[in-house]
Length: 378
Image 1 (cartoon, helix red, strand yellow):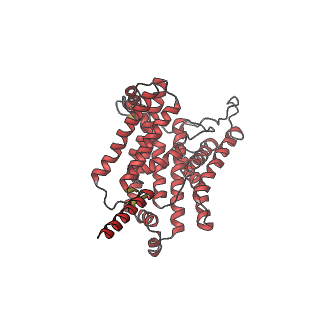
Image 2 (cartoon, one colour; image 1 turned 90 degrees about the horizontal axis):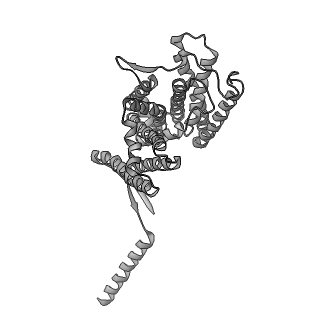
Image 3 (cartoon, helix red, strand yellow; image 1 turned 180 degrees about the vertical axis):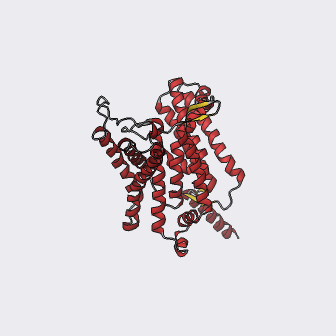
């Protein structure tokens, strides 16, 4: 039997050393796996952790890869901190991309300066609308928000697939399921540094993601809403006695996380694709759940956690190209890394104790027989 008791005091030393130990353990396990499969462990680990950081443009691409993860995980941190489980961010990304794409495709007369704000508002509305459904069902009928939000992911995926293959398909796409390309005003531009120019694929959406995480940290730690979210997640009964409304909190955090996911979908399409297609998200909504928990539901920690997960993803792609490593192997290594990071965080926050019933019974039986024998001799 395994029992987990929350630690009362978590030292800073333990907090810092736990992820370091998890990464070192991952390196050892990964090196063993690569050696057994016939790959050079040092070369494989180099492709995973060093090669993606070897040039400035590759570092920029790392931030681009982490951008949607940071935006989505920032919203999910509020949800999970309030003990509300939104698992449907993947579908909310799609709905945000669809709504923003509708503005870009069917309202080209919007002035250039207003096009991007209009797309952001539409993306937020799309993500919020899909997240509002599990929220209202939970508050009114006590349905499980996990199942509802997850099932709506498939609804969103089928909806965009129908749009790009049907009414929104570009007649000049040669039969491919693609919409028309966005206008220049609907595209997120790349960052140009004075005297340097562009660096890799770095775009202004990355800057917005970092600012969003900082703003979310301020809201979480310095505002009444953030305090309400924490109280309702840690002690809902105390929150009700304080006058906080559980239904409003549930709807608020779900709509907030849905809005963030919708914006992430808009950013991903406007910065990297420029048109809608059946696949606008490549598992970002599910991966962001891991990012949120790696960050301990801290919006500032989401930045570092998003970069770590993005590094693992990019490293896996480089290992496939440089070493001919199958995607299954790179996925296995990435999974081990994330598992050990989450396991380390669990051991950091909880005291884990394993009790063996048979051993305890045998030990107690031996003690009793020993006591009886000593009593008889006495």
